[in-house]
Length: 185
Image (tube, rainbow, N blue to C red; front, side, top):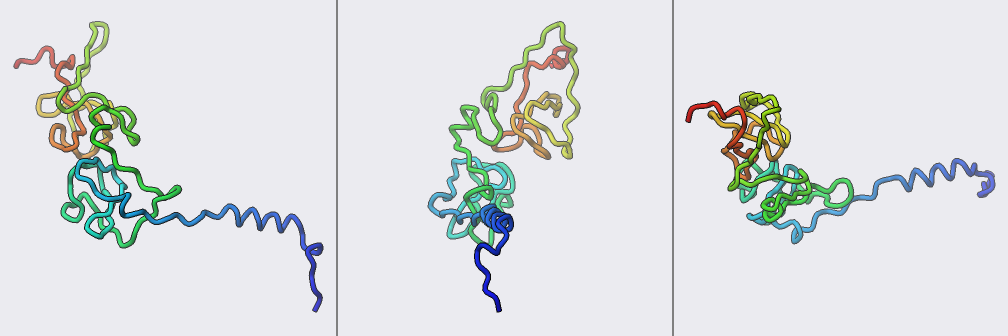
């Protein structure tokens, strides 16, 4: 049996193996229960994880104040999720950020449920009534739909959420839309 020395190995092969080893993902660290504690005042986007009553839960959709383990809005997880690197779930959103219109997930949110959106129209613009709201349709921020004789504007991405019915709100009433000018009260 012959003994091989470092000089007998191919340096390109060694470098390739070293680069392959360095490119492997480092195992992500599991979430810390204290840092991931559920708070009823926070908004939780889809995919956010919380620790509540000794269990881990993942949010199925954007919501606020819904207790994990009681509603369908949360999915119980079998183990602690990974919270570092690319595997990190989206962070919860503080209520104050929503009220001021700033969120990391959706960018700027305009208006609030207490102050309806106001869209002014000029006489030079062509006014079109938005399509009827559909349960099966996906709406992006700024999309408009008519529902219940009113015009609504999406303030968050939404699908299946009826205008005026959700908490947190996904729709904002547009009181002065140009298509409403000729309607009888």
